Length: 476
Image 1 (cartoon, rainbow, N blue to C red):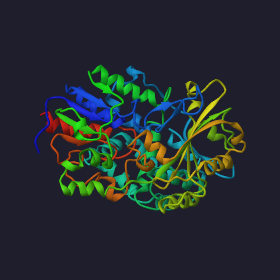
Image 2 (spheres, one colour):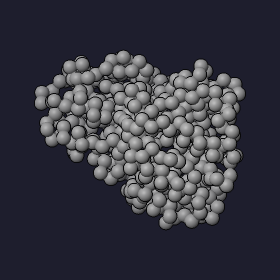
Image 3 (cartoon, rainbow, N blue to C red):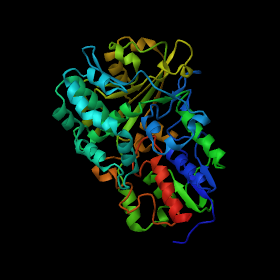
Image 4 (cartoon, helix red, strand yellow):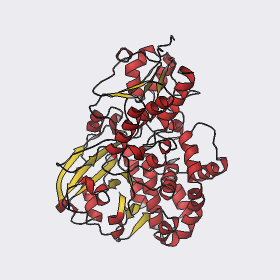
């Protein structure tokens, strides 16, 4: 293919990966313009008054352990551009029906103490991983590049290749430790009895001990705004309200990087790709969707377990067995009867999110991709199960189905917030089987979304690694 190069770079899409790509290019002295279809920058990393005036809700990403741990974002002076991290008392609480709760704390010992008879097993598992979290996180988030800490990564991999239920049954005996790990494994969007769902649970536990599960003061939009501010200080440009539907919509540049999923890339450039690459992109599999509800509340959630009132994130799903059933139903194409519900309580720790005495609550559950089933009642029944009287505190709610999420961010295909299924087949070979996942068969055209390694999450590493590829190939 003929090069489209003329000196500058174009990034299509302003999610965390698109902004990370733009920043890395700009730091290398490349002129960069970011094109964004929406009127607001950020992709799924945005905030807005979704329920009532004065109540700031996060549209997508809310709690950002990967943002705080990202090897790339940690090199940026984001504190100088308005980003301030808030750390809840507990990263996570997982309540059970008896009124008890397991907690995930920055301290391995505090976490272990909440797990009863599994305290020793938890310490044996997590102390070595927590001690070497930076090297392990760097290696995982830099895949498929060669590891820098192979011994620590091998230890992580030894446990991570299992299913979440398999590893929990092997290591733990009590219901609290098993339930806690099951909920963490469910972040994989895989059935938790399927490999490698344990890897996601281990990663999240390790980050909780290493860097915490923080939230940005003022909303996730503030994190995005910090990235934008830094990019602009480097000379980068942002153009919003600009939809790219074909390569003709993209100004000629030294390289074009697309923070989009395979489906959009096929629409934009499919006619230019060779058949083998089109075929691989067409076969790319999207994962489960999410059904999201944001609440404006008249006060804090009245949790039965007091630990939940001190946690930034709460997992609602009961026992490991219940969570396994719920996630398996989603995988089978059924709206779960008793969904596993993920809760974020930002305003408990960030008073800028809601008027005095009021609260915001962020909640979602997994559903089949593209599902139109209304899960509101089932979500609220699960919350009421662990917090009797919750419904009486609802002032307003904002409900978003998978289709509505995709309308607000085209990368959320069918409500998939993970950029595609992250099973063994697509964990590293995404979006296609290529030596370099970020380079397409078209010279100077790259893909930098969460549909490339290392996958979903607000870490920016897909964008950073794609930009590294572009610098080597298009800006020598």
